Length: 206
Image 1: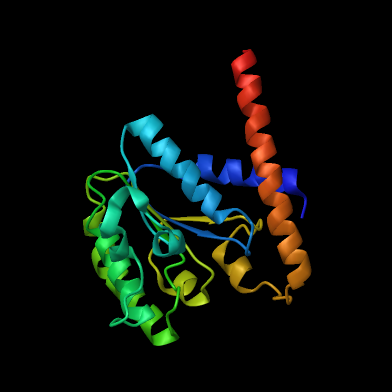
Image 2: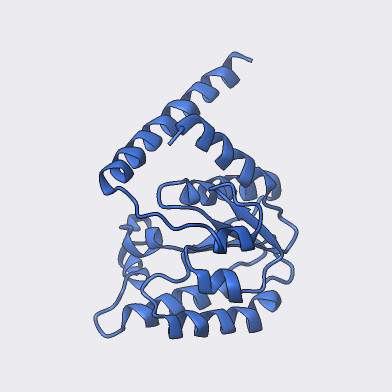
């Protein structure tokens, strides 16, 4: 991976995602910066509109949420609930909690079989537009072909450079080298930290 090139792509994509109440869809291979896009959108929603970002994501499910005390357990999988049931619950809860801000549904397919993915897609297609009334909009991040094929969305974004959903669906799927994947994950993370710090220092100089 060319880390600088990929970081620039992340910056371009996050800046291009509109806050106009529409539904955007984002794909990207593992470690390409999708969660980084979500974090930038959170900053933009606060800086540009004084609104928060609500998200359903693996970070939400695995984080400690110390600021919430005991309530942090509400976001984690429960012993009495299947992973699929909790995924659907988090998506529906997030959709009901936007309050004028921006919604990000990060990897809606986590833990879901194809039947459940289709069920969540059907629910989103029937309810998401109404939930977005008066909000900044929504970004759905996914690896799932079913989501790309079935979800009703307005704008398409790819961190791998695919111009259209059709191009992404028709791409040649090549097995990842797991050692290279780990190396790129760590290398890209370190590059992002360094690049952000360099830009901060340059901004201070100005």
